[in-house]
Image 1 (cartoon, rainbow, N blue to C red):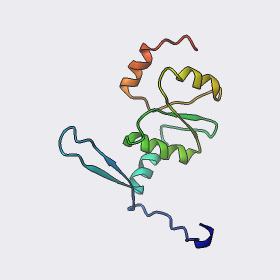
Image 2: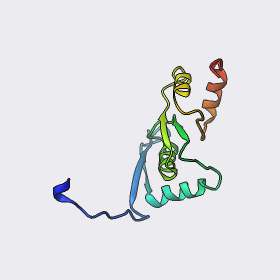
Image 3: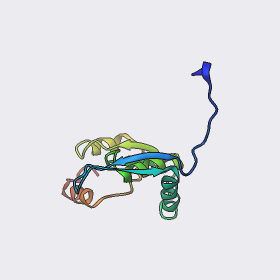
Image 4: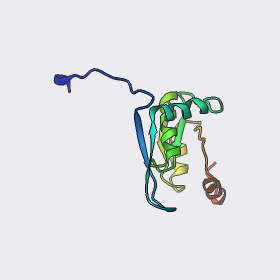
Length: 124
């Protein structure tokens, strides 16, 4: 707090940023240690093919424990993008009509495409 201010020390590239735990479906559960350098390298590499603008809204639909989503969250901070958290296909039409005119959604996984293809698009 205000009474005990501490100096800011930016993280070094080799400092641990997150530990992504596996459920152990193919063996013993374990954690993958990712550094700040790992996450920033992912974001830096993605900027060659992905461009966000501060007016965009990123729809977060993967579990926050998923490594792909963790990298995407870092990327939204880098670009200054708002994040909307997916709450299921039933609430997606309401969400899309109640927010900004354009929602820029990227990073889709195969099962999501199939789920969306089965969904009725009458709300468009």
